[in-house]
Image 1: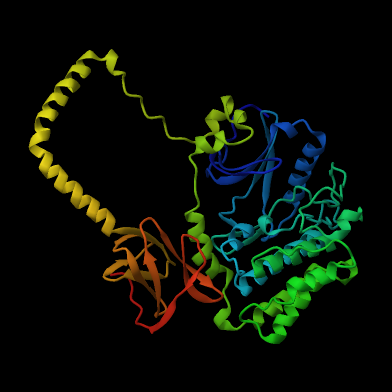
Image 2 (image 1 turned 90 degrees about the vertical axis):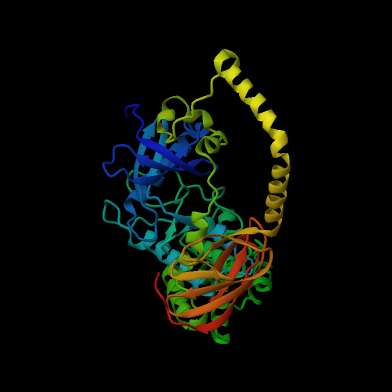
Length: 476
């Protein structure tokens, strides 16, 4: 491939063990679409095994056409590095999201994302067809919350098939069943050099389901004699809100089956998805939150507020920062540098003019000293008596604190101390959320187990009070 730079780097999303993932714009695309690209690290660029797996991942994902699996568009090479070009999913991984819910995510959200994950697992193994007309028999082997993305529109995508195995033409890498995977999501049989089966993905999905529901990871023994006992200590107390006693027991039973030590006791991905669908349908409507609703109230504001380090700084932190110099400089989309000010000692006229200005300024200081001190005192008092608070709330609502209102997320200057956030929704219902106003804090509306709540600076949520129905009003 020619050395022409095929893309512009717009943002660094992160760096993993094998490479960096960035947001980029394709230069050859007339629509100038944004994509995600994975760039292999220099230390692996000449490693035959890693190169084979990278090419296999591209071949594999180019054959998987499913709405819940990230789409790979092409594999290109630049400066001797393979670059995987994928669809850009604007959202957050489930590992990031579950950290916002230390007591567990809403049951309907947790079960629905895992249902869709099981659907993707089943499609990868049974429904995706290779060039020879046979199923690809893909086993992901690294299912976990950090490899599941939820978009700002509520779409679930399974990502990172870097250690997947499958039966497809052109495959280069030899299957490795021991060292690949992530503990504690790795099925026990993988540690025993047993052949990989679809059951390893079911085990990982069961572990992920528990984590999303409970807010913490289930640590299970790999000893067959104590495995079930350690699982019971975690699963038995699990009782998500909104489920009947019978449905909660069915959920616990499903997790026990998915995470069973005995491979034969685990359900198929299709059966697990069907059972999760039944359980989602059984949730009390008052506690049921759709993925679209959750994405709008939680994922979208978090994604919009994610910390974006300046591009040059983010690149400087990468292990392979030298790769982004030379030809790659043209692939970094940055504003032009600010011109440097001339050095004063080389500009005599400017220097003399500035000196004269200083003399005039010193002459006026005495006359204005009293006025300056008074303004300083007033400004300091205002800074003490005012707290600037930023608010995030859904697009179908309006916010009010006292006599101040907001139609879109933004900031208000408030008196420090106890305040009340009133939210009015388009369907007519209103809620009131008490909070302590402090300068620089962010108050975010969230859904907590089907009920409206607020989180201040991402701390544990505080419940809001339903205050009744009011006539919905459009923008004035």
